[in-house]
Amino acid sequence: MFLSRSSLIALAAFAVGSADAACPNGNDPNCAWEPFNPYSCGSDLECPYNTRCDAEAAGYNIAADCCQAPQPSGCGLIFQPLVCGDKQCPYDNLCVAELAGYTESQCKTPPPECPGGTKDCSGEPNNPYTCGQNRCEYRTICDLESAGFSVSDCCQDTRTSTACAAIEDPVSCGRPGGKQCAYSTQCQADAAGYNSNQCCNAIPGNVACASIYEPVVCGTDPYWCGYGNQCEADAAGYSSAECCRQPDPNAACVSDFAPVVCGQIACQYSNACLAESAGFDPNSCVQVPASAGTFSVADDTTSGANCKAAAGAAGAAAALAAAAANFA
Image (cartoon, rainbow, N blue to C red; front, side, top):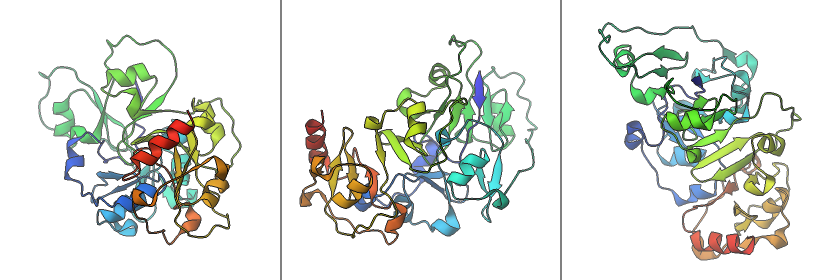
């Protein structure tokens, strides 16, 4: 049974979907050093990007063309849809909207509309999907297409014949910045066509963490899982050794570029001062050689723009492998 359409951006495309192929890619290697901060861009918010740098490198104007798209795994999987700001950016609930930087006064509830189709799809086999910001349910692909949706706009419902344990262990699946689909267990997500590498554990509803925003990203590239603090990540099943913290935005660090990698999953920072502000002992980090690539420090360094968990970062594979060996 499908739990909810936990879509950050209602019309964004999942990474392996056909819409992603039409999205521009700036291929800027400097973006590998930027923080995990997903955006969805385009006329229908169909193009997902892991960072602001990636979106801008692809030619988008953030203010005009994009919506910030924090992952719903950092909030409860509660479906109380909102649209926020002048661009009417869609979010599943106020918690996700606040992670995107909006206040409650900047958001409103969208009209509960589910378009119907005119085509007779009664002869089509049962293949249920849930589509759009209002989580509209359709029995077949024929029905959803007749209503004006495409499969890339929708989440595949788990078929009722799927044999999964009757437990609640919710996950949210899909590419950061793109379409997110929520299921009550990983088993049901698997039955809908996802795998565990494409899903993030949601925070259980009975977990109480302090309202402290010290964001961490956990997992592996490109399917990072983002949480508001380590307590939330712990509740979702990630230990601190599996996560990278962003630097303290108030840290008095200069903008020198002397990149280091730290920790068991090779968290990457543009200098040792920023690594220390993120909680690492600089002496335990490994210097990335100058040959690993070039970097232009972002203007807004106070936003954590020098932090990224950089497994798979362009040009730094050898340094990351060495760091991983050191912390094994």
